[in-house]
Image (tube, one colour):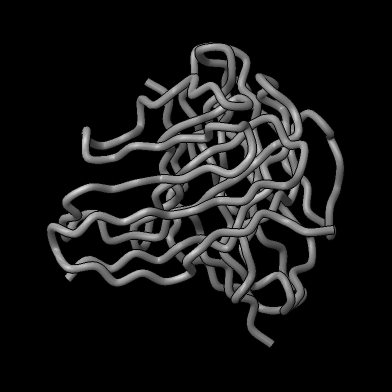
Length: 111
Length: 116
């Protein structure tokens, strides 16, 4: 069965420190993976997707098929990065597609 | 431009009451999703529409949950005979493409349902 696991509920780092939010997935086909972010009092929004191979707000994520992981990384955390982060897996299904989200990791960047 | 909107933003219902939650997707978006997000959890898939066709309703937890999108734009999620375990935030998302798993989803602000 398809599954997305984010092992950390809360991650607290100091400003300027590196940050890595872990995500592991279970899917037998070729995964489409995303990171969505929810800042305080804002709606859920896309941060980045693996197919784009882009860096957004200094964040990157690399798909590791061997380890079935899609960890989100940033070399120097900023206070404005404090938010809830969700890893998501999308796959084709019944003519459309379905998305499964992890439980989320709350990132707190301390001054 | 206008994003996805949902109404009401908050709903308190007595157990056994029926509720209807509305989603206005971004104009022209083909795909529409409903999710249920319990406290401390990620969004859980409920159902998916491509235009007016409901292609996947595998996530609806029981036959008390019903969703429709009759003209391929606005969608309504109806919950009959609400129970306390239905208390959650209900999120709607839309996507410009149909059937493309790499598409970005645009989320609404959610409706927080509390069943007493």
